[in-house]
Length: 139
Image (cartoon, rainbow, N blue to C red; front, side, top):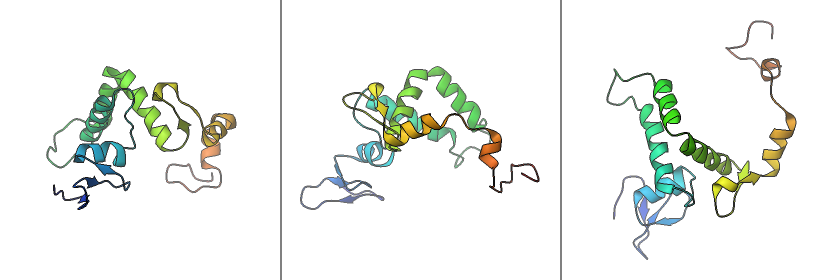
């Protein structure tokens, strides 16, 4: 099996994903190795939700497509449970959550707890001593 972005392990014919793990096909390599998703819950739905999210930002073929945030807002509104599921996977991939048998039962890591314990951020805190093109002059 040959792909343009994955190598094949000659010892077993499996694809070697970007994470160094072995996969039977490209979609598995993308699911686990690129997206950082796992096999719990609804893995096919998670992959497809992420693909639709990315598709909303695909400007390669259609210059007249709707504004991506509008597409994503509709995607999330039509699939709130899947959006929550994928966000839990994302936060797990970022090492802010971890989970056992189901991502729905995730718990905070030390870094996740640190962020919760710091409280909400204000605009002033975000721009404090940080030059930003979005910050008003003098901040």
